[in-house]
Length: 259
Image (cartoon, rainbow, N blue to C red; front, side, top):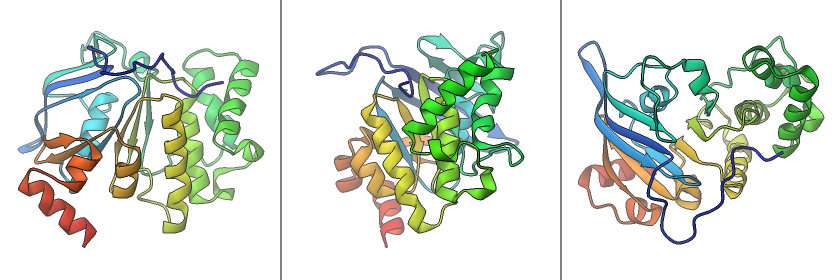
């Protein structure tokens, strides 16, 4: 089983239509505007990394794409469909999106395999045997097939996060959203999760990753977007944004996090 929908690569230029398109999105909590007319395109097979200070809007943007937050204005399209249309069933839309959070959000009373099969069986009506077979294939892909019967508290933090990623992959999402997935890990466990994401990129999986790991952004991202005050303040290749940023705000942020 291949994690994610792997489409035929498009050599040369990017395809004309983005897989994911965010257009003029605004989101406020009371008087506090978190996303301010933000626009962003993500093409199939791309890894787009979001960087920026806490409060810049990275997590809120991902939550809006996953329909965990309603947008106040603007449109989000996935594969050409306006997923912010209130007439759509949110659960049906989320079945096409994989979301992984800072906290692993695993069910502590369920074994690893049951964590992966719960949604396919209850939400999507997948048969028990098929759900288990697909879950085991993904666990094998992330190197945790031998931990299928373990409970989450029997795993390291890095293993738990890899299980969370595996759970998101089971549904073969069109796009994966990852929100600071290494921030809760001990430093020695960060590498195993980042290595998994690098491997997933090789399968053609489309990802939008919010992170403070500049090394990962430099090595794996196709595009880096620096968010500031709820907007994409600068975007470009890792070499350009991280190595030779054009905007002073970007330079200030990079100086601050690199010391």
